[in-house]
Image (cartoon, rainbow, N blue to C red; front, top):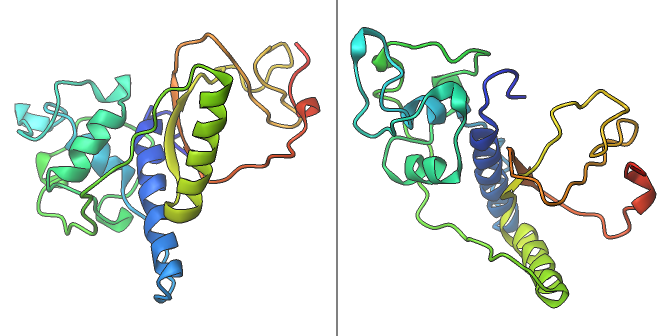
Length: 198
């Protein structure tokens, strides 16, 4: 739960990595381990100036923490040697206040990412079916997928046309992405009746 931090991009990325590692352990008959990495460390480590005393992070981007992020920030963090670190190294807090730069330094890196998979954009029905099959195969073999969606900001109102507050089913088209999620499964028999009739 990102609470008020606008770190959905970090949660979606970390969730994808955690599920990938857990699935690989399972497929390789390794002892089960629960992976829990720090989204807060990803957020701060990908920022250039989010630190007290005007200190700067040379690995970071010129971004304001509260403005959110994207997969490119996350990918840079995953591959630049700063992370990922365990949640216990920098636990989540429901704020994005400037911190002492030592809070992101000298942490034990728990995993290194060497490769990612990018899925193309489908426009025709045939391409969409092919992409769905490719994504299902990927989830089955490797774990969660980072994805961007439009999420209606009014999750509790029955007047929202994009979400059914009873079933939680969300749908939109033609809207700009404003939220990152981690896809970990699917249900081919999910009824269209779960969606808002509006």
